[in-house]
Length: 132
Image (cartoon, rainbow, N blue to C red):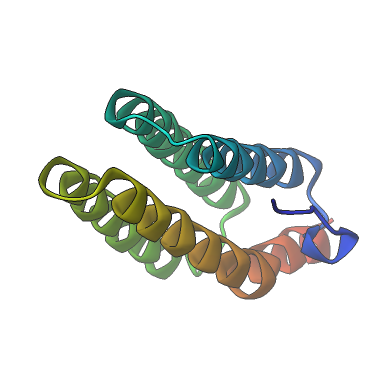
């Protein structure tokens, strides 16, 4: 199970709340993996996770556009690349072991989320804060 830590906060209330929801979805995957998740459950959970990732990215990009963040295009490109990776991993679920495919997806999302929060997201939040 993942524990949200204050060090994961980027200082933007909406984005921090959305990151917390992503952590919650990853924890739901952990719970279901431990309970011997069925393929149907895995498909549903990974679908929900994918949909929320796409929602979060759209919200984040709209926020950057609104504030005129100069790194928007590069940031959005990382989002598009990651969405493609998530789609690839979801396809693996159809052709392989449910638990292994789901765990690979969980790890990829967690690694990306932590790196993205701690590195990339803090840049645009600092830019927004500097603008006042």
